[in-house]
Length: 438
Picture 1 (cartoon, one colour):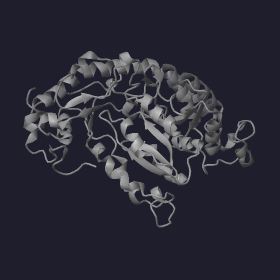
Picture 2: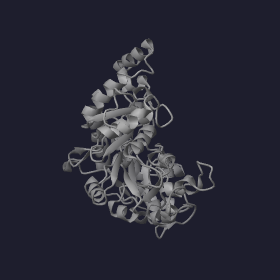
Picture 3: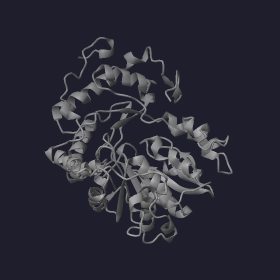
Picture 4: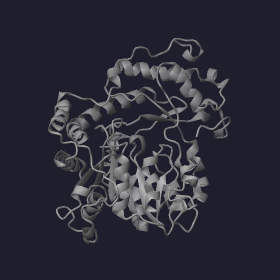
């Protein structure tokens, strides 16, 4: 099995058990909870959702939780909650899913992009470069489950009187120095859709300790709860009872809330097994050139939650410039669907360059700002050359099969020189030699 499968050798991985990767884990308990909703026609109610919100808030360690249709809706509500508005700027790492910050244009605000570090996390040392008198908030993303360095981020926010929103869509239940992510910022929001480590169909949730933020988020998307029973402290909202202030319904489908209640009961236990498996996998690859785990030292009280969309960092300079594309091509031939890049850098997309939502002849990202924030996008070029690649996201600790997958990566690294010939994307001097992938 020493010859690379890409060149005719035997693939390293064949007939792997599906149970290694099957997710979420659904049992008869989940099915019974779903059937209760179906048989009772409770899809559009709120009773089950309210129970889930209470349970999730207690688990998260926040006073309030509010469920939405999806993670993007919950992040949008968080922006409304903190008062993001026309002409404001919100700082966001450039490498993240578009739903983290694209909706800022709905409020007439401008996304300002910040660089990432080698762990694909927002780089605290680059944040202050992005701050102007118009900056309202920092959007922190615990990308691919890696907890951001929240101590310096919160110090910067306090120094400049900025709000902090945490996007925890990749890191539900993750820890940073003994404290759960999603409890540092003024407000946090996350996706609980079917592909996440916390998977409940299609769902989002927002958490905060601030009653006024909770009420504003509720009024934004929960029209049937925007009333005197729930709006206690936001006097300015009382005249708008009975209408969702965001102009659309954002309440959760209770089928998803029912599933989420069951998933929450077992989530920490299941994540612990994922972490055991993933840490063992990376332990087997320790010291190999070219690849580096994206993980934390758990002895510090931090962890990677459920290791959503597990990734490794890639360093082409350690493999004579072998591109991450070519590397992934070789791994795919060995039997694992490895892909490079993660999400594209947002500053490279035309949506953030010239999309005109309001049909006013001006890009919406800068429509209500007195400066062109796009001119700073060039300063995020370093983030385009932070390479990563997907690794197996093990859901169970199966030492024999984890060893096989680790051996597969060792095989590709051991034979990397054979991959250099024909590598159209070979990296030279830290930049793409051939075609760019973004």
